[in-house]
Length: 338
Image (cartoon, rainbow, N blue to C red; front, side):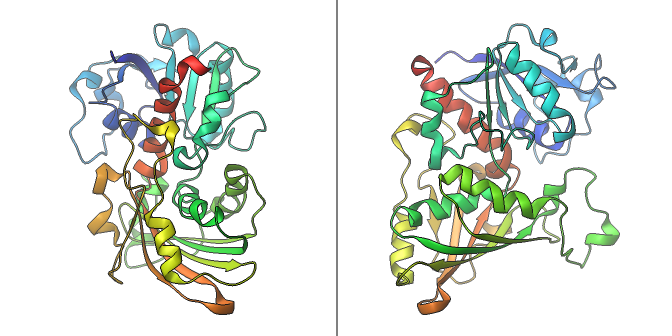
C-alpha cells in the first residue's frame, strides 16, 4: 500500500509528539502537515516543540512548518490524528469533521457523544466497518489511557461470565500528566492519591465500549514511574466465581479479531499473561511489542471475594497514540465498506 499523506493536530504536545514518533516509519502513513497553537504557527517544527520523546525527532517532520489547526491549512490530507487538549478539541475536531476530514482523536471531548464511536480496536473495532455520522467526514475517538487496558482484560471475561462489580485502582505514570506535568516536589518519593477528572472517565467509558452497563468503582493515583499505568483489578461475579486458571486461559487465548487482520501496528498475542508473581513491572515490560502489548499477572482468588489481577499498559503508546493509530488502520483497511 502506497503511504498516504496525513496530518497531526496538537503536534507539539505530549501525545502529538508520540504520534509523530510512531508514524515516522509507518508503512501506510506519511506525516506531511503538523498543526499547533497560533503561537507556534509559522515556525519550523523543531523550533516550536520541546521534544520529550526517548528517540530522536524524525528529520522529515523537524523541517515542516507548523500550521494553525484550521481545515484550510491541511489541504492535501484526508486523515488527521488529534493530540489536542480537550479544552480546544471540541471545536477544532468538529470543524475538521464537518470539512470532510477523517479525524482520529485521542482527546476526551467527543468520547461520550452518542454519534461518535469510542473504540478499543481489539474489543469493538468492528463498529468502524459501518460507521455513519452527520458530518461530511468522520470522527473516531479512543478512550482514557486506563480504560484501554481495562476493557481489553474485561472483554474475554464478559464473553463467558457476568460480572456484578469491577473495582480498579490505577497507579498512573508521570508521563500521563503531560509536560511539564507533576512537579518534582510533589512526585519524588511520593504517591498522589487523586488525579483530577480521571475516576469518572474510568467508571463511565467502559460501558459504552462494551455495550453493557457495568458497576465500576475506580481509584486513580499518581506514582513516580515514567511510563506504564499499572492496574489492580478486582472482579465480582454473578453466580459462581471461575477459577484463576479459567481466567488465565481466557485472557491468554484472546485473539486479534478479523477486522484487524493486516493492521501493521497490531500486537499478537493481544494480552500476555505472566506466571511470575513479580510481573508485570513497568520498567521490565512496558516497551515489549513496541509498547502495544497489555500485560496481565497475579491472577488469584475464588469464592465470594471474586478474582483479583494486575494489568499494565504503556500509557502514551498503547493507552493513547498507538490505540488511535490502530483505529486509523482499521478505517484504512475497510475503506471500501464505508
